[in-house]
Length: 371
Length: 180
Image 1: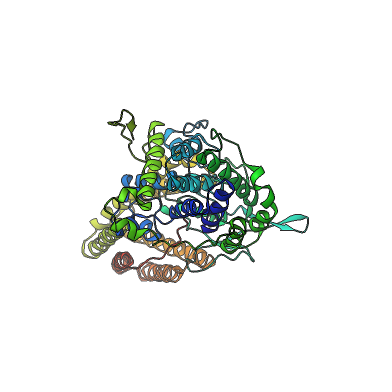
Image 2 (image 1 turned 90 degrees about the vertical axis):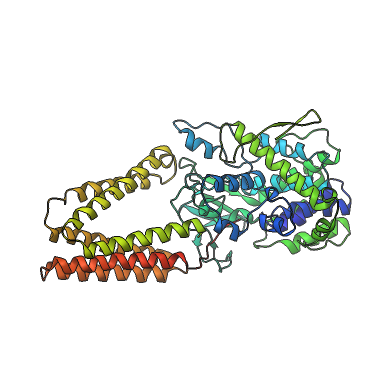
């Protein structure tokens, strides 16, 4: 997903969940910051690099794909962008080496999602924003894994876009190109994807790189053969998935706000969204690669407040100049990011895989335990 | 390209250039040495790919292509081993054949890259064309004029060229598509 959903749509969901305008701004800022908080940014503000929630293109270009490098990649991408669905999934005749990667495939309504949302409870708006980013991405990035893997994330020529045409749909093969400077051309169905590399651990095979940005566009409907899918076709309906993501965000945010007693899987707040459903549907279905303007307009109509654009430097001086960094906006974001990363790494390690690294549980002085 | 990949490219380039130099300077034992090197390399790649197929790729859509590649590599290793008892002329022609085949592959890949709008297709195309021309020159001198020494010299020159090109590409700025 992109800024249109992580920032503006998250604002809308928070508003419908009962948060005030300022709280909504904090939540959506944090949700969008997940896509910017790289090791480079953290070094710039002299923050802890282990709190990185993303990796920039240049960082990925320079990262070593040895064990430590792969663990670093997996910790970040599996924790924040491709939350694993079932860490104990089985597949007949599959060796352990394969299963470790297979189990990292992202999907919606997982046990880890419940843990993610519960972890954010009573931890402030920054933690809520991070949880909303993770939740939303489970819908966009489902069927891909947050680790470089040719056998899991590869796609092939069998890739068709399904386009609304009158009352029905037409199909056309997607043409993928590798020109980094070319924009996606949704009119003609030409999209940029990562290079085909049959090296298992090439960063070209990270996440949905081989499917380009199609999973990130709310209008996209397509069918393809996922590399792990045993020749079974997957039909991805983003408008429907994004609507579910939006309704699930409202439900999760209501839980974090204290209006819902618990957070359970497969529950969506369709009631709160009802007055806005048609308008949201129009935005989701509109063929555009950036829906920020439309979502912004809707958010301003909902709350009656002006929504300022995302500014990456907004809280940086507050953090760098503060004597008590932990209590600043970025300080809380960093704490929540580390907690989320530790939780996911712990569960991956507990399942018998060291793909995200080794998790150590320390007894905390307060009687609990820190991972 | 990360710095680890750049260093690997430089090391491979240096080794190739040294092999090319040795090929020009050494006498008849160079053929045996080169054959042994090629056999070991092909066996290593073939076995590695076969293990990858058995443990991972057999479960993936289109994974059979990995099996085919590994079988072809192992076959090539066995085929190469059968050349040890032949005269240097046939040996050099075989090596030239591999060199031309690699050039053709480079050109096919470059055409594929061009179709996908990847900017690096021109370099690949040029290097493929150069390999083919060099292979043809070595083949003509060996086959038509019966001068295996000249073929060996051209082949060695080709190896040095490949090594230098590899080292140069390690310093090239790369632009790749990463989807986040």
